[in-house]
Image (cartoon, rainbow, N blue to C red; front, side):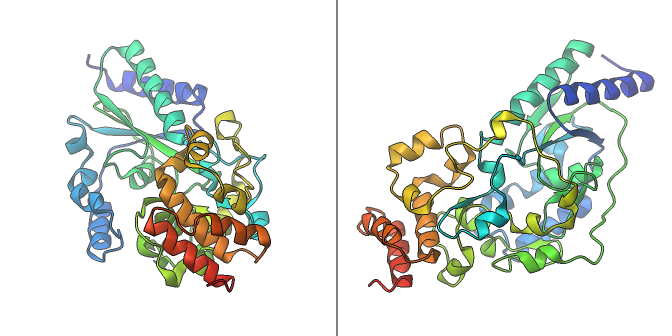
Length: 354
């Protein structure tokens, strides 16, 4: 079906309305031009800042060309969805309670992939019901798509110095998704950068992972170290992790634009099982069956149970010395995985235990 320019403009407005009905806070449309973003990606890869995430290098060509990922793509429909919940303990409070675990705010409830991707599919279904079959594919942080540069081109925000997308009216506590499509919809005005001279996020990073404005070294990033990393956490960085056991929110907490952030009303993002303020010692005692039950449908599964125990061991090593902390660590001193045993030994040493 061939649509006129006027029909495409009307369709774009309908798509925005449908997206709002589906719970997305904003939708923008871009004609992808990733030449500059691709050059920056290759510079980043050449510096080794991707750590052992070799899939980023393997798929760099696809990331640079949406049409190579989904043949026929001429537009990218980008959406964002707020995830911060008013009923979750604030990060500042967690920072003051080192015996509790800090889990990145996006991971407290249901896995965002399971929330956003079905809604993007429903959005595509609404479009096809209106105009007939069309070419598209939905992505939610799940394929070789440069979602942040595309979202910036679609007007959803700018990429801040910490590498996250920032919106002038909504801060950065939101998630992104895309429909790559062959519909030649009218495009939105790209967002302008408003970071100015601010370097709050660089100063706030516990491990100094933001090595320069707009440059994040994954090898030092707590989010990488506690989630994607499958090996040991570098000993020199362990103290800096504090009580962070899955991801990190420090750079977003420091960003002044988040004074405009809005809480999400999505029930699926509500904290589950008290994970917004969990006891480190109690979590370390969970069996794998308990962990699987309490992280069902959660993004936390990405770390794996062994990685989860590794992270908790480091956090317990940084926690105040109490009988509960020491007893919890002792339960895993002889864990079958050397990765866990080594981190437990380190943690016990921090408490003066050989």
